[in-house]
Length: 120
Image (cartoon, rainbow, N blue to C red; front, side, top):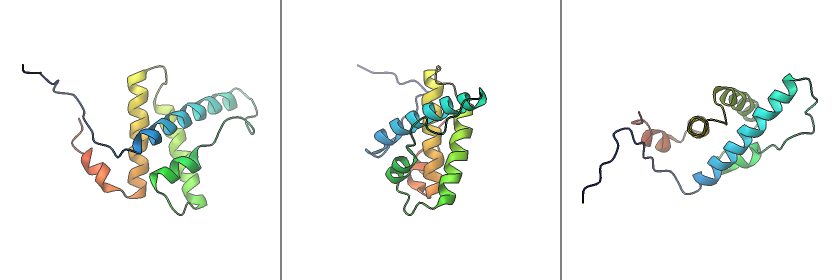
């Protein structure tokens, strides 16, 4: 029996720990998107939401983690959140994965980026 594989199927090999990292990035993006919307509506969000940046950056392998890294991370996360809608599942998953690649690029891990350079 021959199985036909769709031409546009994107298969990507990721490290085993990437699944947890991708999940946390998705949760961080949902949280940040909510916090940003609440701030736009005029609410004080100083004590709202969870900050998963320490955990995410640690799992990616950033060590040390200077203040400049957190500033860059916050700006990049805000930008990533605005590009995608969590109601659109495929778009959301792609946005989470794209942010993961941005983090890997910042870290300088070219092995993951090289594996994904042939993506359509």
